[in-house]
Each structure stands twice: as structure tokens, then as C-alpha cells.
Length: 126
Ligand SMILES: [Cu+2]
Image: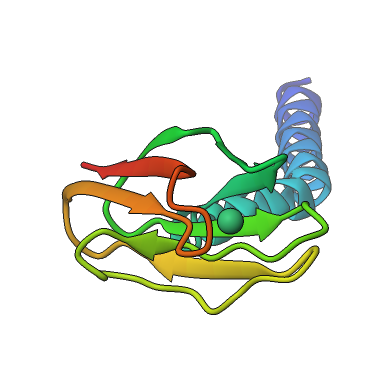
């Protein structure tokens, strides 16, 4: 009788280990994918500013240090992106062209379109 009980305990223990293994195997790829996604997201934060109808949107954007900001021109005429102290300056962007800049230090960066200086925007890096 004693040996039957210990046999049952042993079997239950093996089942528990087996279940844990199955769960680990099933969750492994999911957890791995989530970790990989988080790693990519942490590595390459990108924020997009669109240019539509002579307007930068969002006009003011706040990002963390290390963030890459991408401007995309949706107008059918060219625009540029020029920081007022020329910290960054794009070439003329044709329709659907984009320009990216990575902000490596904190600060407030006012920019405008070199072709239409009334078009203004700001990136706040903190
Ligand atoms: Cu413009």
C-alpha cells in the first residue's frame, strides 16, 4: 500500500512537470515574440510628423532623447524641414518623400519649411 501511494505521488509529480513543460513550450514563442517586439520598440522609437496642406502635424511633438522623428510630405508640392539653428535640415521632399532625424540630446527644436517659412513646428526632446 505504501509503495502504491509513493508510486502515485511520483506519477503526479511527473505529470506536473510535464504540464509545466508543455505550458513553457507553448508560451515560449509568444513570450519570445513579445520580448523581441519590446526590444525593437525600445531600440528604434520613431515618431512621424506628416505634412498635409502646408501644415506640420502634430505641430508640437514631445519625444524622449534617442527618438527618431520622421517627416513625411503628403502634399503634391515640395517642402523642406529646417531647424532654426540648422541642427537638422532636409533636402526638398517631393510627394511621399520622408526625412528622418534622431534627437540625441534634450532641448526644444523649432523648425520651419525653407520654401514656405510660415509653416512651423516644434520638437521637444526630454
Ligand atoms: Cu513647404
